[in-house]
Image (cartoon, rainbow, N blue to C red; front, side, top):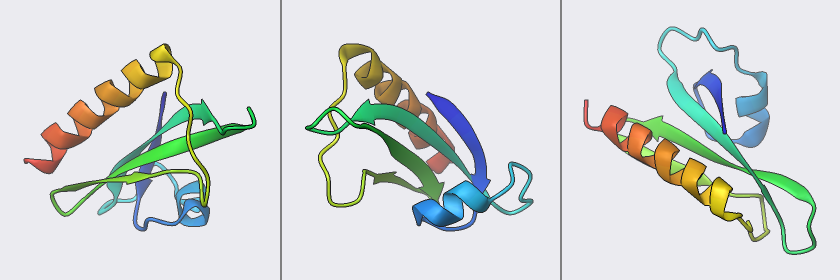
Length: 85
């Protein structure tokens, strides 16, 4: 799991391009996972206007190990806490 910084949009290309110091941005995390044919992918969790947004690999299924699922649970809890502020 990694905190990828603060973002201003939801699309993966925007997430990759945003610096961690956007003054009015939102927090975003990436959880590494695999798709059904075992290629490396990631899930992205973003907090936006009191909502938690979960973005999966485009057009694919994310397969999480037990450890990755624990990371997702931790990130979702953290994002939910931030969304309630």
